[in-house]
Image (cartoon, rainbow, N blue to C red; front, side, top):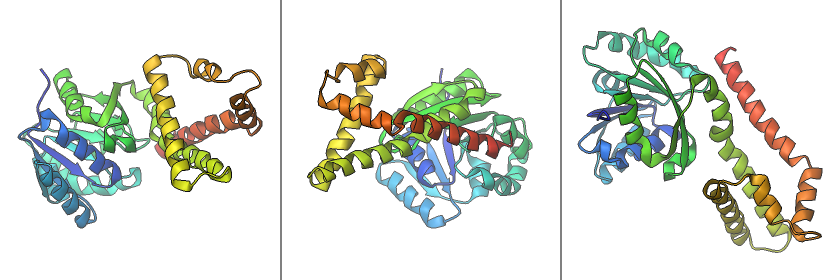
Length: 278
């Protein structure tokens, strides 16, 4: 039976923290739950609390200490370089707790074991690598954990289901996964912008070119997921002999398009390893 969390805390309510809070608030598993929100810039937490309240959730802005003290599930939505400072504030609180709690980290290059070390407690830890499309329910979220039982993981997955695709993977693969799906949206945004620029160069109005480019990327992605065909097969299906598309493919290959995309993922992965000190 999936565990239901009665109090859900978010320490850090930036883009990713707020996206996940919105997703969680939409879940049936959040019915009756209380959301505690804290952020270095208090106005951001206050704004998120108001948004969640407007959608019917019980949400309030509070402090890091009170969020850590009272939440069953604690999302740590801060950057890796901020974790030491955060835990210097909340670790004493966590060590004094008599009730169970689970920490959720989304910091790049930071293992579950490292989070436990910073907390100074052998508490359950869930590590996730979400991406920004989670804000609209089209995200990809990889999950691994340490010291958690199946009931807790199942409850967590049910809570975040509105964020998009959730998949459990071994922790030794999560950094590579983040380089693909976590950083990938930025690379895709650049591709959409470039497609639109090409359309403008050919005479299309900017708004039309952007809509056509984004729609083409969305449709192509759905074809890959729903047809379960290899992208190369789908590409071959629309490149007629001596046609227009194959000439475009030729130009992309001449520019090193696929190599550049691969190098972008590898560079992001290598930077994650640097952050982790590996």
